[in-house]
Image (cartoon, rainbow, N blue to C red; front, side):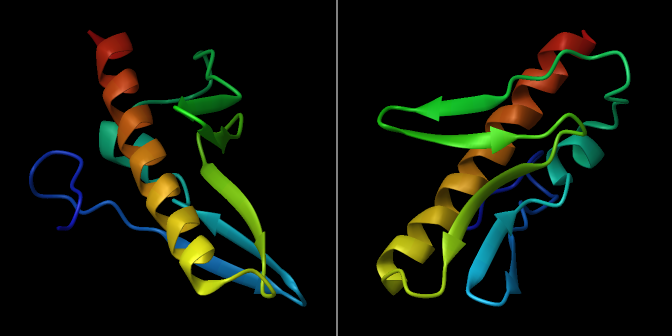
Length: 98
């Protein structure tokens, strides 16, 4: 099942590799979908999901680090967590915009 921000716009997750390190990110998708400016918003540093959490940058980019040596299952979990975090950030941004 593909996650969407608004029932139409898909939540996209990108994986960027630099040597042995990976960065799993939404590339600011939640902020773009919510159509808000992050200049005057206090964004959380992290969004928690039970025992897991994702990082949120000052610009609203949801991300997690990884390495190429991690098992595929874990790398898939990182992508899933970033997607869920991006959707959670989107929903929080809509609430603050009201």
